[in-house]
Length: 170
Length: 355
Image (cartoon, rainbow over all chains, first blue to last red; front, side, top):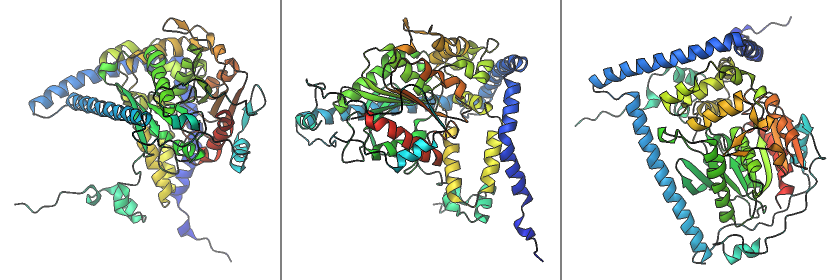
């Protein structure tokens, strides 16, 4: 006679599985309730009241923390903002270096590093087929994706500062 | 002199850590399991205020002619599109031969509370487009916008008849607020948006996070329960930690943009009505003429299908397509489902239009 391996049965795991499977239904039910005007109106007012309470509490807490010589949330936020300004400054330096690099490439002081732009799409491979198959609904206007005519290559120099090498590659 | 060693987080008595250890997950792994996110090599080629425009280093010997500019959401960190090697849409595009740029809007500070849609759609985004063209040496690019980034891409393209946009691809971009029933109800007239902005300047990131979580109230509980049932699978735990890190890292919503979004988009639903004016110019979706692809998720609770399906219907493009895929708002762009479904579909559509 076959015996049940009771050690393999985990009631907690079964309970958690049930939660996972039921979640969408519960969330949908509560969402339906929350978007009802009878609920959302009072909720909006409640949020405003909470916001004002939070403000008052923050002011009290700030005074207490200052008395204890401890930083408050607003002190930390000020520090965070200062760090943010530093980060933004560094990004501007990085962007300036990038422009410098580009200018040097244009003058052929350093070799351009970009690959050529001559790639053509492979015929629809298994990946594309899988992607299309996975689409549960693909709709509208013209039939999917015949390759449009390639855009003509620019006649004039469209981008000052690019190297002749890159233009020739295009 | 003291010889005491500094305490390490890994050796502190942490019940979660101890539970993981009992389940066979090594202690030193826990603190690093999520790993660094958004690590695909890149250079910053433009910066203004908090905005940064990145260029990812190509990973193919031969590129498609048309570069791709990724426009991210204003309220979510952009690294959801570049989680870790092997789970990164950006890396996938690079390996397929696309030249990828990305706009990171950054974390607005109080001094940025007056940033408006005009600043984004008529100023910052066009300047990024210009810089991408200058950097790539091309005359046109493809825009790839996710969530609110998709909406910004649509607004920019519709407002600039001569925009150098070769293709427009949106991923879960909301256009019809009637489909955003919960948000619309919560941000209705009783909600004091001005009071919130007067207090904080911008909408704080934790407010954004709570609003998004409230759209699926039991999602977090179910996620934790599901995780506990798969705790013996380190890759699942890692993936969960990465997503958790991203979900709890919302960006503040710039005050001026929030005000316009609540008044004109959520309450007024002016985009689909054709009455939305930005910078004194009316936004007409019929003015979109570029090849258009809209990628949607069938179980998206943040941008439900009812809020996004009108984009393709109203766009004036002759070549337009909507693809609805299995999964949710985040699963559309990241994770195993995205890797199997969305990324190949995107590549199959975009590649022939990028030569």
